[in-house]
Length: 116
Length: 233
Figure 1 (tube, rainbow over the protein chains, first blue to last red):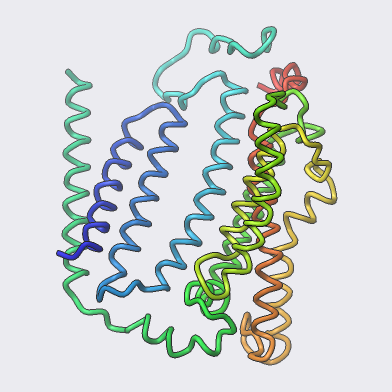
Figure 2 (cartoon, helix red, strand yellow):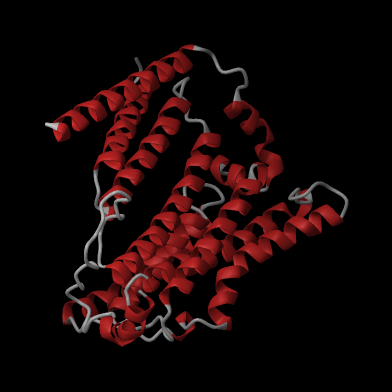
């Protein structure tokens, strides 16, 4: 049990916490954060597992660096999409397919006038 | 009761997932690596044109990943600004008039620009490089925007598109040029490796900062557009 392996196991823990949050939490922003937690767990896992002989391996580190940049851009795009969805529907969660809505969702606080 | 049962089932699934993953990690850590990658990298570092192994991997040995990465970033940036539906991404409503921010900005923005330049240059022989420099550059852009400094280049138009696509197109141009010159796709000629990597790093820094900044400024919804957006919903 080396210290670097500890990082890998911390990554495993982060992954499973993120998975729980991603499935259970309804709010879209929190879902996105949980998804990012899974991503961070994967990065930690890769970097932790790669330093086997005590020497850090540059190849997985470069891959993780690439992954971090892509994750930031994807998260920012997801935030833009979520804000757009909230603006158009007034909801912070995705609509349940089974739940039938008798009336359209209430207009949001920051919107003047009824959309219809 | 059903809700409690659902949580319990999910906890069990997550624990099983964590257990399986931990077992895999333990087994991988126990087996010796078939290839000694750090050793292989150290042997070929001289041919790469830079002195830092991570930069060498990012921009020479695995530059295909980096090319695709900047492609993903450009797509994300274009998708972000096309969501915004505003005539100007530089919205005066969202400016703050905080005197503390102004004071901070006067000290921080030049410092951050210098830091971004340093990080870019440092990438050749120590930790640093295009991505870190691009992130710092984007952060100083965010700060300038919050302080209300006009940034005309953020209007959706030729200049913004040019900035977004610059890194990707230069990178692709280098890749195709090396393929046409007879060697493999993305294989730099050894004599020009260092200058080519430096050029690619500079344009990558610029484009990454542009993409992150464009995604930041396209997130808020413009108030003046609200009636029209209501109709769309």
